[in-house]
Length: 227
Image 1 (cartoon, one colour):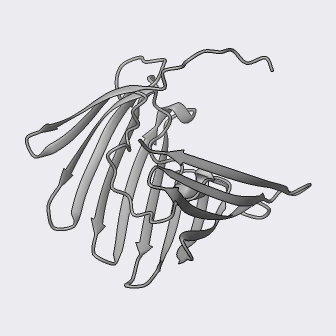
Image 2 (cartoon, one colour):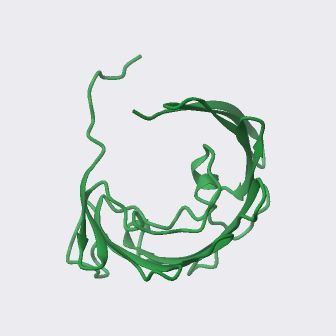
Image 3 (cartoon, one colour):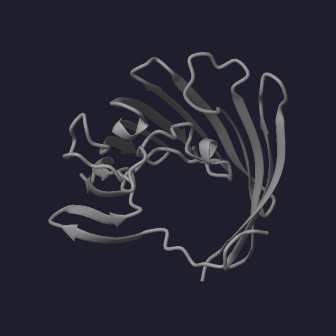
């Protein structure tokens, strides 16, 4: 009730090769859109699915991002994002975002380090993030993430995904965001994802968000279509 029947364009971008680089530019693009990352975990809660490193990419409205694959497991990526209020580019007065990432991916594990300077966050705020994943020759993977800013606030994440029957079960925990004290600041989720057919995947799950006064509990069913 009260919603309008409109179609909203979420973003438009163009991706193209440039020498040995890959470039993406456009509206709705994040400075981390070409990051390799090292998060093998994926379910339905945004913070947990980001391996607890939600500040990577900042809050830019549009961006230009570039990546390069060295061909030996090492990759590098970076981008510059622009907000709605711009007074110069990469100055203390504008709302631009700068992101950088280096990553290494092997057959059974991966590690990535990311830096984000986000002027949209209210001043010049820098975030430092690390992701790691381990996928042995077994039907499971383990992912971890850690992030902190220059105000010494931090967040942590741990998640496991394993094959169960025709689908995969994911269980993860993370802090709700960057905080100095993680007490009563955790969130948990469990989700089961399975393919109904070649074009549809269904993921039911539940989550718990801790609060000092009253914890929140919810159940979600996500359906993804591909055609």
